[in-house]
Length: 144
Image (cartoon, rainbow, N blue to C red):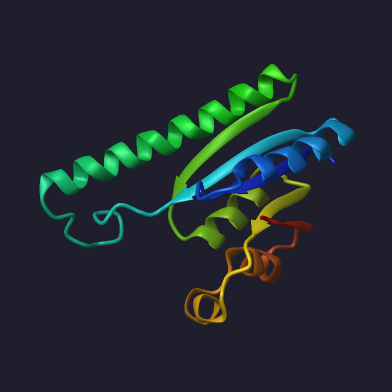
């Protein structure tokens, strides 16, 4: 197992997920790929982006997410890990699947929060979609 992809959503409990992934990577001497899929820009999906302040705020959000990924990777590298961050825009599940295939990922590690039935009925779960669509093994970590 040479490449492990870790999906991050920057909501909460990222450290718990990264800690589990680090244990796997150390056990197998694997490279960690930390991936975050951010919402696409309105222009990208054919919508009017709106006033300039909305575009400015969106740019700030993306820069913040990029810095978070860099911070996580630097912390892992200080522990002697080989780690890279990937920030992409688009449909979350599809982007994760495409990137994992392109990078020859051996294992996808993703988190799962126990959300209510209303949330699941409306939006579903990214982790369940990854499991359904991925040809690569998926490890789902219950997040507290």
